[in-house]
Image 1: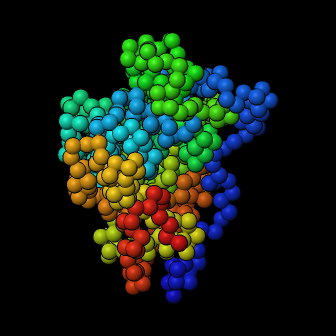
Image 2: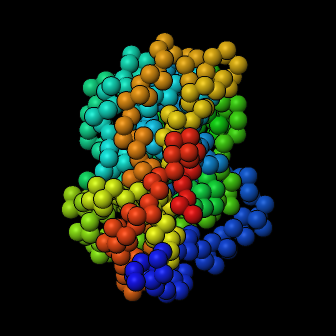
Image 3: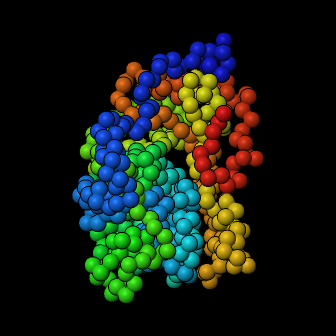
Length: 443
């Protein structure tokens, strides 16, 4: 009789994990901070938000910080900050969440998609130059699933072509790349702080930069009360007082108050997460078919809070086993396992055919001189990303006995691949590649 649970064997995961996966960690300290805002009726004021911005900038090592209603708004402000506008192009990895790049349309700019590296799952610097034209204004870098992107190569390309680099570190707040804090390497960074992120304030986003002009443009975008006569950027001065994007984007002070408390404990908490996650992957070292999605920490890099931890399936080492079948077997073992990552953005209708603003043509090509959709044909790693990736548990505490059970489940399934091949129907081609925003579920 097979020892695999999918065929009637005993489950690998039997322990009650307790609060192993509970996140964010909130205490009475956050409750009191929120109640203070409520009692003072200061939800829409700015004093606590400005204190949070100051502390966040200090913690990250940036000169300026601005907090926004959400991560999408902070990314929009970052794009506006670097001067992205009508007719400009911005390069972005195709494998990411829509909020990374979709608001470029709001500014009249054109997203151009580059391929991802098969191991880091971040934008592949080797593919960036293929995408550059005389209209390229910026590169949007995503530190995807907490893995730092290859910033040395990216910054070198940007310097060569005189284009700006925006870091979307919504998956990697607090991480490091070769000893430098992620979010301080590009010209400007932006991140989501919604409840599901590793740095979570409830709902919000924050932008950081060392560049005063970028900061003032981001301020002018949607912080109308603070876009005032203190602005020194010449082209902005005549218009102070009203938000140039025509919207209010500042974060509410409930979130800022929570952020101030979370910031005090964040580094300590994600350090324990990294210890737990590295232990999990160490237990699986050398298991056929299983490749860790993690970075070598010997050069001062790390995986931050390991947001949405994933692994890479080396199907060729498992007789061609599909990731769908792999995840089915893991679910039977008691693991909540999902297949795939964000579906490539270039496969979505909104980036192929949607005419959002009544241009009479697809919005993506309405403001540029070339059909950038032609470049989407050369994204081989983006196209197969869902067929070679799967989720792993996001441990919030270092509890070896619990972690060992989960690691044993992955090892057991990988080593039992021959039995799984017989009932393997392959990956579901009807759902893979149709353009869903979110992560796939195997059950």
